[in-house]
Amino acid sequence: MTGPPAVAAVETAAVPVGGGVVVAALNVVVTQPVEGEFAAFEATCTHLGCTVRSVAAGTISCFCHGSRFRVADGSVAGGPAPSPLPRREIVVTSGTVYLVGGP
Image (cartoon, rainbow, N blue to C red; front, side, top):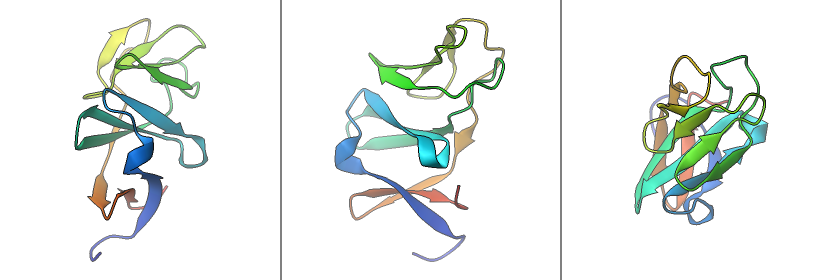
């Protein structure tokens, strides 16, 4: 890979289609909204800064106050969060999702 530094976040096989995984060590959520399409978002809820902890049924959830975000684009799906989860730039290569610019 050339360009900005990147850090491996997760193997693509570990990210379920229609769902995602929280990579706590990097404070990021990696999702796969549809097969072969990946996205990554900051894992910090835009409501009061809690870390999101769960991804299920197409939704990223923050258990602190019930905010929910869509796996496709990080937009607010419910709860008190005022704005979407910030998107992180990624590169997918050789079965691994990399965060561009590091953690």
